[in-house]
Image (cartoon, rainbow, N blue to C red):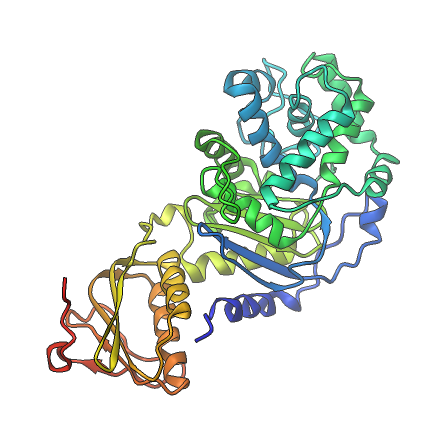
Length: 424
Ligand code: GLN
């Protein structure tokens, strides 16, 4: 059985493919000339499994998607008090390049807008660091997060610097209020190099899964950030990651997120998933049009809204046990997207031979919509491959036994008659 998740991701991409509304960013010459059509996405689970679709390996510059990561690095290197002195953590509800500071303190409102990100960049590697050293520390940090070597596209950075009056004004303003010490030009150069790091959607999915998982890179297993630092970065993403669309985003999608002007968009669902999309055309707020569409659909279909408070269920697979001519798969607890993903992955690695497959869900307390759909789809696929498949569901937890092709799942009245009773 091939897990249905990659097929689902293709369907998601198809659902937004025809939408060519929005414009690519035109204030950076290299981005203005970029192909507007690529469309890709990737998911990374807490176990480090990556699912990708479309142009998920296509490289692009990270731009503002770098901001939460560098914020987390600043928190890790300098601590909360120092970072708070430099940048506030309040949503600004303003555009990403707004020339504004918090009244009273003269700090940038948050690290997700350019003013905050330029200030945060200056905290890395200490105030006395050269631009080159600082940028190299950030690049190496991104490599650790992605689990592979990444490069900075200097040509893209210089193209952005040709007309960077706005970011330069922000840097002058920050310097005026002694929020930063570097010359405005150096501060903008350092920040713009950070933004010019090249990544793809798969890298971003793994990087955001690292934030979602409390700082352990799920593929390499290495601890890169402390859990409290990740929690703070996610909190600021939730309130300010989508700029002046942050409130709407939180109500409709409900996943801490960050967008970038080259068309990247990440979502970090605490304890569950890292998600990334790539599509360059942007809406009026500077967020990827098709990326936003994918996230809206994904969140609704998969029940991923943070405020839906669906308890995590990553240990919903109790055991897989062979008995006579049948393999019994026993589930337990709550089956949501993460739980079902885990179960499907375990089933995929199992060799059922010619045996009957029995799914015992007596101990499942509940399925959410997507959990039910994914488990049924897996059974349908096994049946299509010629397996004899049955469900043991004495409490009628599954509620509806109809597969996606309209046929019904076979049920067992008792495990006894098949001598399939649990042995432990
Ligand atoms: N480098 C870009 C800028 O500062 C990043 C902005 C963004 O991605 N929203 O303008």
